[in-house]
Image (cartoon, rainbow, N blue to C red; front, side, top):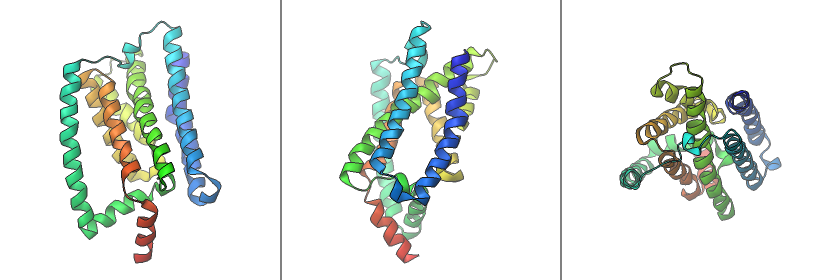
Length: 234
């Protein structure tokens, strides 16, 4: 349990602090940071943490089912239909927002908080797609599968919804580099993913949805031009 606690401390406290100052340095000195290398470091960190978790589970003889790696075809099929409906709704909502100037300005303002990490070139977009898949898989294993297992093993009598709330707060704090609005939004997204994890009792469903959410940054328009035009207009 000690090793699990150390992982909890690292992903909940230590890394968010490192990440916060790292992002500040990227914003202050963007010329020092290659986005490709930054993406590579993000993927290396997340796969390393997940690899350690898998290794500890193996050494302790704990089944990866405890991380939520179970599913049924029926659940996955119904979920994919649900995702299709969500994607269609999001697509039409995005069109409406982009067509209305005041709403378009608000979207651009939200993305400016993480401009330094957003891909511009096709090469950056392709590598960022790898980041999206990595984040979707690894963050769900860490913040849903692992953390749910950890809090359940503490025997504090916490309900599943309470654990979902706690892990979602930690998830939001872990994205502190996005500013307080980004933290709140990410926390809500984390809670929604945790609810899906509880409902379906499978990590695969939040993983799929998380990947889809993050992939939007790899396919949206050229942010560099958007920000440049936005700043000129301002």
